[in-house]
Length: 512
Image 1 (cartoon, rainbow, N blue to C red):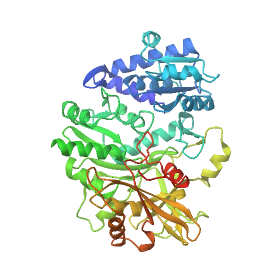
Image 2 (cartoon, rainbow, N blue to C red; image 1 turned 180 degrees about the vertical axis):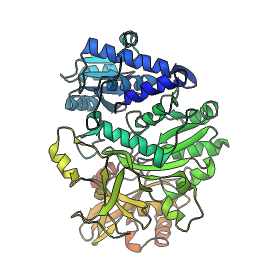
Image 3 (cartoon, one colour; image 1 turned 135 degrees about the vertical axis):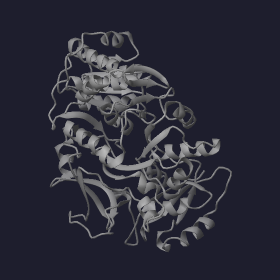
């Protein structure tokens, strides 16, 4: 299924329904949205020679034109290559070269930077704020979207590359269709009066949730800041109403803190889907207390986008079930189109409650890595995607993450899962953030080291944290060293970069 066909259907059924908003200002209804997309597609083909199967990069900050560009690409049956606008131009150029993209949509700061390092394959840069883009919107529209088969490539998503060069994840039309339908069955319903707010990068999770809202004829809102601003969201939500948004845990924490400080209750917010990193128990309980029954958690990867497990809002908000706390600490149960199991290193399924690697199989799993059969064969074995995440499954099917396999600390022959230690540290009233990594040690193999950010204006000592840990977890799991810092290194999505923490330890640094 070509997503452009979803846009065609919605424009036919509800042409006057509001579609694209910049802040609270309406930019286009669905009929106008479709007209722009069909005209752009026609212009891209006539003036730039873009054809079915071609890769087209989108190196842009959040804007409504982002959606116009994506749907124009798909109208032609071409492949979108979304690139986070916060990446360095050299990083973007590497992705463009690897994908062999012949055209790149750009905006704002990205044009000048990319021009200096643009790879040879890239023949054209198209500025969505420029006159050429405006002219393309006026072309005679393409009559209909190209047909796209379920196994044909639609979205080429590059992994973050924290352990080396990023790999291009091949997401097909069938993957997108399965993920979209799973949202309705396992995550949340969408109504025409709803709105999706793009506060996180549209190149990733936030943007990939556009499909559900196009199908239902809902509104697509890009805030004036074009990013995440907690106060801006809390102010605009009551004016727009029925807002859903995707947010990383760090964003949720900031939104909750701002709401709490200003006495707001999240009026106008309907659903906040959180993912992309651990949401600690204390944080999500505070979020529900402040903003109410608005939260849904999903667990996915680029290789299985947004589609491994889901923890529906009733589980996030429940405080009556005997296992509510364990369920709240989980990432939920398998989404409808996939099978999930926990396996040992040989691929054998482990008993209930045992920790192993999370494997997933089903119609949302990627086709493979772009032009990288070796990496594909290593990651997809016998039809199962090896996620690299360690976890356990309970008798009811709830999956609890226990870190990436590479993050597990082996000390004295025992496995120590950093998240368990982090949860305990964060339960201390004077700890704002914590990250736990292993440090090589001759006697024990690895020692547990905790990087701790104290609550602003508060202090906490090693002895206090040591006593706190001993009171809650086994002695061998407690940190052997505490490093007090003002902030933790994070990537563009708010995920803590443990590779940098390990490098700090290796270089003998880490104290403020």
